[in-house]
Image (tube, rainbow, N blue to C red; front, side, top):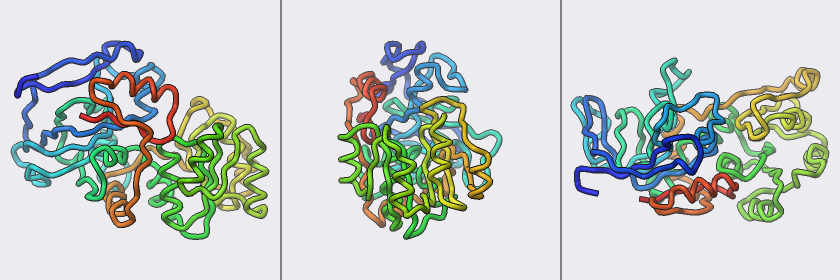
Length: 335
């Protein structure tokens, strides 16, 4: 690689076997743009869905994957006011969503927006926020999608407070950030997971209770809460699991629908929903203002993201293979 070229990975076709490394000229920022030298990229389950052609919106091939990165601003275009150069930043997941309702032109990085699995990435100056001062680049790269999704569900929309019980499904990135953020706010956390080793790790991370996926976890949640149920639930599974979560939800509780591991269709009882006056909210990450508040909370509380493994840039395909197998926490690719 020369000083004028950058490294990048791109999918030339669907499937991890078609993730190819290449070089390209380093782009120069135009008006309102910044050039970021990437230090670390974290992967999300969405990246796997896109790569396997299992996502509702098909990426245009070839495409550079990845939406979550931490890096340093190395050049700015004409008219840029938010950045001077030299700042440590992290990307926003949803482009141009600053606050309030998402605009109609909002798109996610990594498709259809630009991907970040490269040594350099060109972004609008609006698509980045200051990185936490308390985290390494690898840790900071885990925040834009998984951490913000959990934060948006529990804090921005859910107004979580001490004394509530939060039910978390699984031990992926969103789930573990949900665990940590709920504990940070004084809530009791119950984790449902299929793996015994993952349940033990969840306890070590701060969960108050863990339940096996194949157990009657609805009955156990009700028992642990003296029949009340959980005030907030992070539903990362979907499918028929959604209906079971409704049964474990407290009266006037909030169920955040986030994941689709069991597919895009959900099922559950309308009577249960009406009877408990349940609040069901779909969560699609969050806006830039919420990410800035999350960064401040991370620094103030010294929250440490759970990273399952870090891979060198040359080993990016191995990181995707690990993502396909499943991981306890986040997977990071370092440059």
